[in-house]
Length: 250
Length: 333
Image (cartoon, rainbow over all chains, first blue to last red; front, side, top):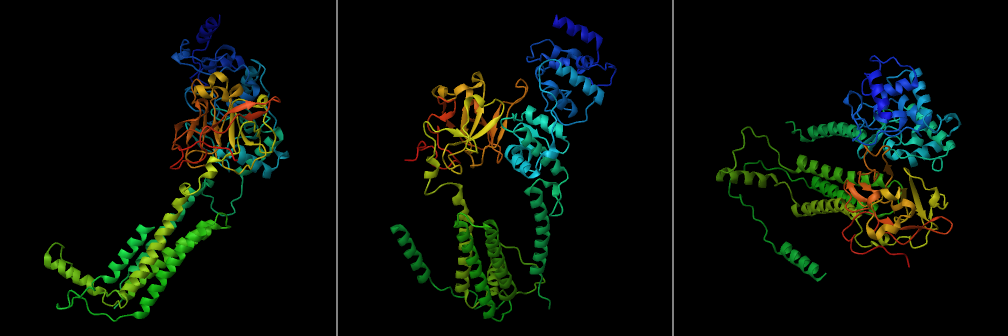
């Protein structure tokens, strides 16, 4: 039955899945958008595609994707508003990009994915209730290892921990609970909602932090600072060499 | 000790009994114009060299403190001062004590025996203005020796040379509860998957290198522990030392795939040099400079469901050093 539905969908929406939105697909309902852009990887009704031995999807795409039955509005909202999804190649690491969907399309897709199971709703963080100072210590403890202490991003083996400049408070709250890609998940027993508010307040502060030392050099630590020091020190040293090596004037 | 004494005596005898070097080119016409001796400049050079030696020794003294406010700044100051004083001494030598002359023609290519002799004569005559050669040589040796020692001494921090006891003694033993940083016991049922916890032994000093462990939970079917460690992971919960076996940083990163079909395996990662350990395979090193797996702490649950240690670590904790594999860790007596 599912396979039949899949074939039917392929016939109805020829420019599906890996194809870029806006190319001929006029569906505005969540279900229609899902069928057009999500189905070849996430399967019919969000059942997921977990094995490459399944038949290839539309446009001969080898779809692979996790089931979406329990990600809820929270998961769908995070992945769609950040532009992590749709992902052209399921083996790529999703990056923060402009979403190809407009607001109504995202809302429709989120509502559709939420209707697939019993997942969590979109969180409502209150960073104004948080405390920047305790947010700094919580961020240092839980997040800074990968995202760097002023949220400039960093690396883990096999992945990039993104900078949080573009992350909205809601997206941060969602990411902490989901643990997208290789990030660990932080359940309420690890970070309470109140602590999360403080963390978000701190991340918001890093976006407009003042630079008491003057030039921030990207605020990524000792490497650019060292380079600047060397460039200045090297010039000064060359000057010293010229002075020392000058011959006595007769 | 005996050997050291004999070598010292031999060196002393050689130094005292050596033949004074005769000026080799006394019978030849001078090439370099004779220069006035400058004893004051020599004293300045000597003072600068001894100052450099003192600064280098100061570096070693500051380094030997365990806890000192602004230690890094003092270290930098001492080392910088040592280099600056040596540089100043060399500048004074070059400006005031070496006979300088301007040469219009190029030096002849070396290799020609006569040109070779001329060159040697040049070098020797350039040092004519020195009146206390051996004293200045001793000063230079003192400065260079102290600076060399200052540069070598920090290598001692690479590993325990004399006392490695702190790396063998850990507070873990059978029955010690795992608690979080606030002292609350970790309950087996409350440990969730896809996240990680830091735990400490109940009642022990959290600052000890052997205290912190990182706790992660997997589905028991995901775990591939060696046969003798089958019982170490109740409910799929495993614990490893949080101290990286490469350079002793804290294992602060945990990665877990959201969709394991296309994403990398779960791993514990050290942020210092990206040593990457596979927690499902007894913390085997899968990337990075670490040379051995993280020591695993055998776990069990007590009657209240709290996580307890079922023994000590599987190996010595902390960074690698020459004797790391020689004996297993022990409990404090």
